[in-house]
Length: 369
Image (tube, rainbow, N blue to C red; front, side):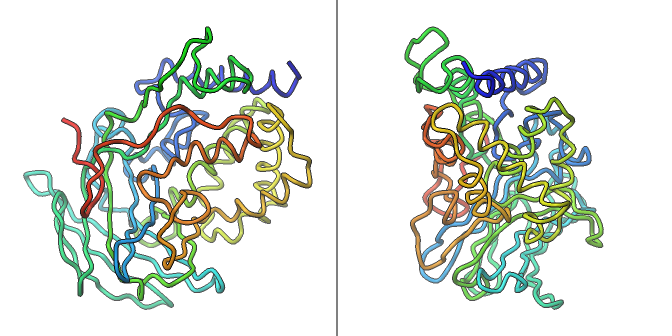
């Protein structure tokens, strides 16, 4: 086994061992839960500001569903289950051809009632102007202005991922086998997220308020906007490329915190002398060494696609894939990104979508008991 391939095994093993003593051993390689791998800590210690995943898919005629999940492992890791009243929850949309044209759907929550529910407002901000779209109460679907809709509250976590398959495939078999156990036995897949809950904000908004070809990301900020706690566009960008860069180099993963604080994703490729671009290149070359290693030029070209960390979406094209055009709940983003990161050496983590997604708004399954 090459030094690079051995390094990958050590990195994954270290991550798995570190998590073994943690209260919820499923966060390595998660989309953005706790910004794993590394020290498994929500940004600035705020579980209620921690973004898990961001979704964007067609809501039917002239409408788009925008969703953002927060509060990782609700009730298990995140024991304070209410939304923060000192944080703004934002789903941001930039025009692909004019990145400075950004509109933000901002959700602000009030203090919990005696029954635990919270009232909230939804505001559309653009060009320094704000327009109220309406509001509601957590735990139930509410109508917004026109035919638009909103939901906020606990749901089944829609994310799916098999930690054991990842470790067995990448570490134990060096990428040569897929969906096998450590002794070569078949592995049908165990989804660590199947029984977990999350908080979710789901919006059905008119495409007139979204745009056509856009780039989307979620963020959580202080009320005055001076502090940004977390942000996420494509799944696993921060967790894989900034988290594993430090694992490979036996360092502290402070890059993840710095990445989360960047308010304008357009700065991702060049900020701090291109540090985050270099992180992507390093990790792509490390993981692709499982098979046909990316050259530096190939990795650099792919880094230009993956950064800035925004999820592209063409609202006229309902076919999503989770990475390059929107993201629906059932998109297998882990399989897609394993193929990208390893240059085709690792193709799957053995598990597929959950069976509890709903066919109607808010689409995420009801919370597990």
